[in-house]
Amino acid sequence: GRVGVAAFRTTHLDAARMRGARRHPGLPFDAYSLLLQAGGKRLAYSGDLGALADLEPLLLRPLDVLITEAAHVEAAQVRGFLAGRDIGRVLVTHVARERRAPGDGRRGAVPRAKALAGWRLVADGEVVGF
Image 1 (cartoon, helix red, strand yellow):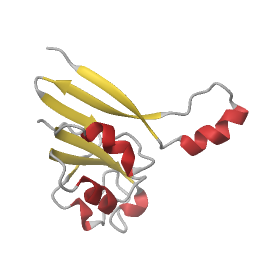
Image 2: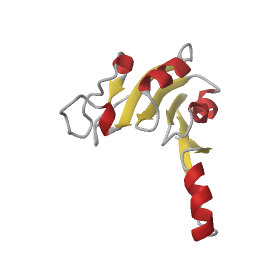
Image 3: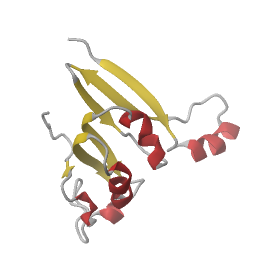
Image 4: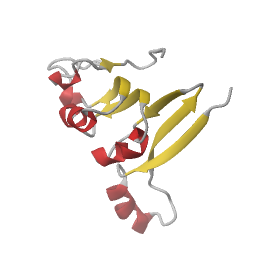
């Protein structure tokens, strides 16, 4: 079947764009979130966020799955921002080292933030059906 893909620029690299424009004119410094639609399902991937408002274009209609990062934003803030939104499942990836459980340097380690309760932390290479 058909798959629709839409990309939305995030503010994650705005500061880098300002710094880099002087040294590398014409080189894009952009980060994007993605929205995929197929078979009546909607999946969104936050990409790297610069601000929680970067999620807005993904949330205009209900989502079956939202994959969001927890390295550049606090999970508790994301949870508050998403409260009351129509999202079937939230999957978390890209967790910053300082937000992982103390003493656990593994990739995909469980974040110490209780804010992830009810959400699923996905590991590199893990396949999650929906």
